[in-house]
Image (tube, rainbow, N blue to C red; front, side, top):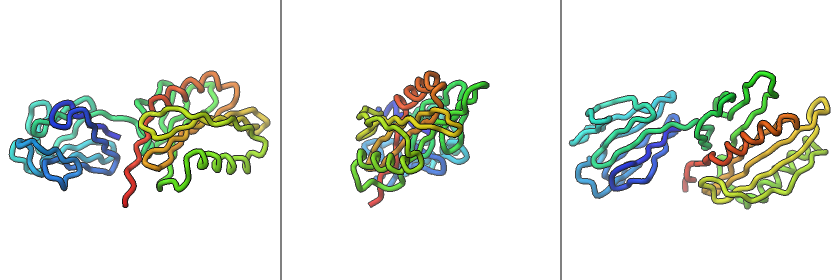
Length: 242
């Protein structure tokens, strides 16, 4: 997922998120996806940013005053993370974040690899292949988040009847309206003792979950990584359509 940080102009300090397969049109008119009023140097429909196959492309939409990438006027240009472009009085800094659905994380940690579309996996020799997976509901919840979490645990008990669940603890999570940390201990295949840790969040009424399952002997190593990931992960679901 790409983030466009607005570093100058009428909407300085705001951010545009552009997902794979999406586009955002920037302009002065209200019908644009990201409207910037009060800038006479900006055309009504000024430029569009789109992401396809992991590449961000900036296209000028025939604007009167042009769109510039670090001082050079462009018509269509691939923009790498770390570069900036200007439209009217607004400056946009392009950044890229690994993403899984509506989840964003700052980076893939050293020693871990990406499971495209799902999460990350530890790839160090001699380590248990622990995954950290990111999931979400696609529709707003019709129940409170704690009740959603309780029902998820009931489903888990059917598969793992001897599992021990700790009481979920409320926590703060970046951008979330509500969040809880949960932990369970259970017996895995072969009689190995294992644990599962989960972060449940709700934003715009939509639930998202970060989940990690590992064996006890790996907990000291991967628990720290799970804590680091959930501390900086952002859940940014699309607003529900009415």
